[in-house]
Length: 222
Image (cartoon, rainbow, N blue to C red; front, side, top):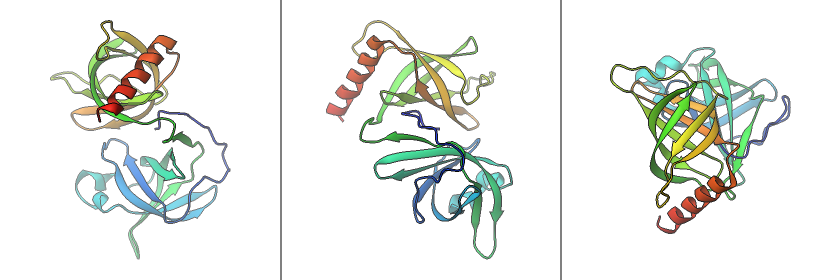
């Protein structure tokens, strides 16, 4: 899920979204983000979205079953909203549609406050006292997206949403390695890699300053 300013919305409160809104959806176990559109809604019960064309082919088609876990994201007035949900029912006729469970918790971040910077920063991650190598793919002052590739003969470390993790990374121009604590907010898995959406927390003012400086510098040269 999102990794920035988290805002929890109580169950039953109408989400900030309009019919015709463009959506991005991810199925559990599939790293690809699929584009689609919201076409209907029954508040507190379900959303109706168009079935993305890509889901009708290959391995993604196998995800079209009741209970399939998904992540939905969309943009509304300069803010990105997202939520975890599940597929209630795939409809194949007369139109190809997906009935998705109405969200209980919404997360959001303001694009105007926290700009995401693409990067390639090698970093080690510690999950349940097990350490692995990986790469930070993009970063904001509030979180990052982190890639772990499969090692030959090894399994991915077990990780769940909301699990506590620790990153050990070295930023360009900074001699020492720094420790960044975080919490897993979303997980994307493929056969050879796992991508974690991580929300930072309990980081020191020094590390916050280093991250902010890195983002500012990267923006100047982008």
